[in-house]
Image (cartoon, rainbow, N blue to C red; front, side, top):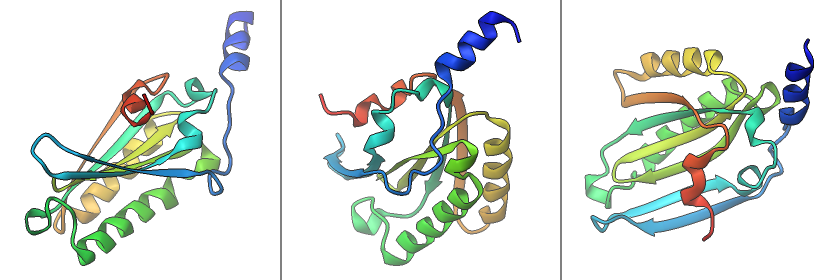
Length: 158
């Protein structure tokens, strides 16, 4: 390992093996179209000083029919969304370097966010879950690099 690589690894080495006891914030807002938005975000992770150690962001997007409920899921849909989210969390464990940042629900879409140390495993897992549920609900995912998690600035207090 050359000195530059060693310096980079030491600078950005950050591990969170257990996010179970972190504090989460519930946020709510109103979209421009008047529909409600509800988010649950891991506040401690958003303030974590080693974000660059987990530069890959994985987002699972789950579309459901929320027309009868102001864009929010009804009880059975809510339980189904939680089932999918729990399945993802069981595979993408914080102890393995996949941190659940939180979720956002609005306008008939739930997005579940993870910060990851790499992109290969989340890509395989999310694709497998998408295939598994493809006949039951519309799922899609995206994985992109956001070294300092700037895409989550919208959840930070001004």
